[in-house]
Image (tube, rainbow, N blue to C red):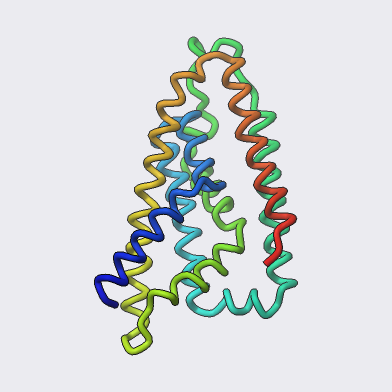
Length: 209
């Protein structure tokens, strides 16, 4: 892979990764509600799912989903259902009446495994990531060179850029937490993020391959 091709991949991945989506929203929301440590566990789950899906796609599952749209639809609807569930959970999340005197919510913050699993499921809920990887990555792989080393470079580059954007969203969420000391503001934040997750679920449920 030439240096020019790699830089083009970096540029395109930078803007693709920056696009707000369920992963970034979850990282920002958990950072605002539970702190940066919780956000890091969420990031790890999201990234694990993304890299696994991209590796599977490189192995041919993306083409399989193109060939068998019923499989794609089943995965898409299952993902939409999980996002809708997460949205309802956020919407109905209990709020302390006096957030300034209340201890930080420990139920999730003290359980990084739960946050990791949450990030894993949100990232894995979108089968379009498989199709995206199957369509996007081959554009930067030169046929006359060995495929595996090139794919390794692309995945490593994608990982660095994705993590950088995760931290941008996480730090933004952490700064947002200063405004969530009022119970009414926290309730509004929960309902806003819950509504957005439900919106993502609706978009996924009605999307076509």
